[in-house]
Amino acid sequence: MVHVAALPRYIPSPPINSFHVGPLNVHFYALGYIIGITAAILITRRRWRAVGGDPDVVNDLALWVVPAGIIGGRIYFDITTPADIPHEWYGVFAVWTGGLGIWGGIALAAVVGAWRLRRLGITVGVFANAVAPALLVAQAIGRIGNYFNKELFGKPTTLPWGLEIPYVYRVQGGIPAQDLHFATFQPTFLYELIWDLALAAFLVWLGHHARIRPWGLFALYVAGYSAFRIFEESVRIDSSVYFLGLRLNMYIAIILTLAGIIWFVLAQRQPERPVVVLSTRARRAAAEASPAQAAADDAGSVAENTQNAEGTGHAESTETTESTENAQHTEGAEDAEDRPATDQAVGDPGGVATARSEE
Image 1 (cartoon, one colour):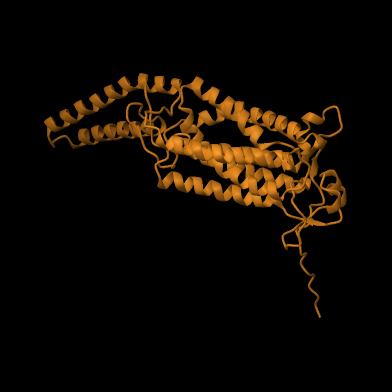
Image 2 (cartoon, rainbow, N blue to C red):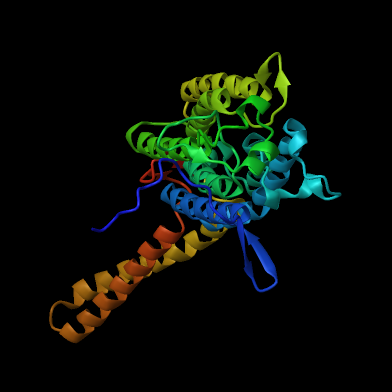
């Protein structure tokens, strides 16, 4: 008789939280953030291209906002959970051990990103709509690192998806003494992962099916994510700064939920204005290339008129002229695809915004 091992009635904790590549110790937490950031860049490039923007702008922006996000996230973590800072001289900087506050990271990254976009001459609100779903995907992937660090768990539970937390991590997590004897806890990191992906999909769907003004999707990102954090903070029991009996993050979640909703309503009520999706340099390049393109089109028209005048007696010459015209039109189409015209409306296949570039 074959005995089949019974499946565990809980989510087991991973036995390791890092691995070695030669002398380098790679933490899953850091790896999750790297993968998440990469995914966010790729998604934003695709969405930004869909509204006529130059996808290389996303790479340029990432060089500024990613370091800003890490710095802002760590500062927020150090302020709101000082008890979790490692007792080492480098403890306040030890992001590889866990500890990046989402709100702090997004806040500083948004300020730096807005500054950079304004210098490039790009309308910030349109780009914010493009990046909103990508941020949620990055956050979801990053939450996998919390699983390997055995952190970000909630109240004790006997549910089948309860997360096993070893005793030493229960103590390090700063949970109340009366809960130390429990073995399985609510996997709040998993709840947030699922919510982030669902909210990202909703924002993409809404952008395709509704006319969303600049900043609209980003405002919904702020409201939607913060609304979930109200629930999450009511379940979490790990260490945190408390104020009037509630976790500090609970107050922030409530404030940002209301602020995000009001922000979205105000954004949707704004009158439609011309927006710029190409950088100043790209617009100048397009303006300089326009006369050359016009000359090419004129040359094609002259060739066509000459062909018609000569009649059908010169088939070989006609075939050569048509090939030249086709090459010119193909080149023009490729240029139009790579560099949207700056004096006409740009469509919205990516569901981000309806944009029009200005010279």
